[in-house]
Length: 227
Image (tube, rainbow, N blue to C red; front, side):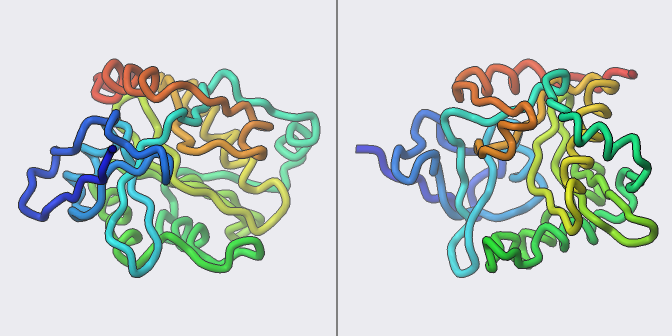
């Protein structure tokens, strides 16, 4: 029987158990404990592991199988989204207001009044942004933030964390911009973590965890190539 691994604050930040030790129920849970230091987060992402937990819980580390990914060239831009992009309703920026984006992602939603983006989680990703590891895309309607997304980039991989929308199609515009930017800048895969009907409609598909881990070994620590 598999058992969850507990991480200690004394453990090296780059130590995690093998992905194959992840539980089947709850699916993909690999470890608990440790901290959200930048060194541990970067090490986790590079191995295909991400933190996800609720307030009051210890830090929980996950590596689901299969893994939801978007290959930038496979992004599906529907006719209605193409009209939105051409219409000039929104403008898009990169890394203009990371904290506003993460706060937008953390805000309560009708279908999910709670949030997994705790104050500690927020602080950890703001620090990753400060050191150039985490990035945001902002979608604006005039001077108002209408939507956006944020995530972590390692080498030629972008790890999407969360996105939000205050207006129809704003988060889709953000993802379209991300896919286009990644295609131009030699990012080979966008990690979407878990599948959903919404993501599938945009071109996201699931691949085996071992295939995802292989992609990371090849691309997560590759030198960033000029576009």
